[in-house]
Image (cartoon, rainbow, N blue to C red; front, side, top):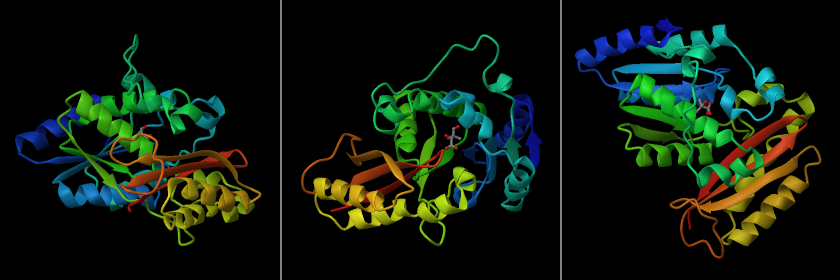
Length: 277
Ligand code: PAF
C-alpha cells in the first residue's frame, strides 16, 4: 500500500493506473477508522481495480476548536486496517496541501447547508462540501463511497456533484452498528462508560419511530424514547422527504429520512434511518 503525504505522490500512481485502464474507487475519511469505514472500503474494493483512501481531519468542518483538537487520531492503526483491507494508496496530506497559501475558494450548497444538522453546526457542511470537492478533484475517482449514517452529508455531496457537473458516481453505504444498535462513529471512543451504555437509545428511538405511519407520531415517539434516557439531550430531530430533503409532514406516503442528534456529556452523536410507507 502506497502511503502518500503529498498530492504529487498520489498523482504518479493515479496516472499509471489510468494508463492501464484501471477504475478507481475513493473513500474519504478523517481517520480513527472503525467497521463503518471498512464497509466503505469493502464496497469500493468490490467495484474497482484500485482503491484510494484519504485520511484528513478537515479543520474547516469543525465549529468548536476543542472538538477539532480532541478528534481521535490513530494513524498507525488506521494504516494497518486499510492495508489489511487491500487499499492501494492512502493520501495523508497536511492542511497546507489541501488549503494552499492564499486559499479562498469555498463550496456551499446554499439551501441544504443551513438546514437541520447544519443549523446546529453553522459552517459545517460548507467545510465538508469544500474538502470533499477538493479530494474528488485530487483523486478523480470513478466512484466515491460515503456512509448513510451521515444522511445530510450524503445529500450535500450528491447535490454538489450534480450542481457542479462532477464526473463521479456517489455511492451511499448502509450504517454499520454495534451489537446493541449504536451506530459506529469515531466519536464513540470519547463516551464515558455510562454514556456508552446510554447511547443506543438513539437507535432504539429510530426503531420505535419506524413503526409509526405519521410524521407527527414519529417525532413524538422519538422525543418520548430519548426523553426516557436521562444521559441523553436531544439536540436535533428532523424528518425529511428522502427525494427532496424538504420537511416531511402528515401521513407517511413516500420514503422519509429521520435524522437525530443528541448530546452525551461533551460528545454529540448522530443517527439516521430511512422509513418507507
Ligand atoms: O464523513 C467524514 O468523515 C468527513 O465529513 C469527510 C467526508 C471525510 C470530509 O472531511
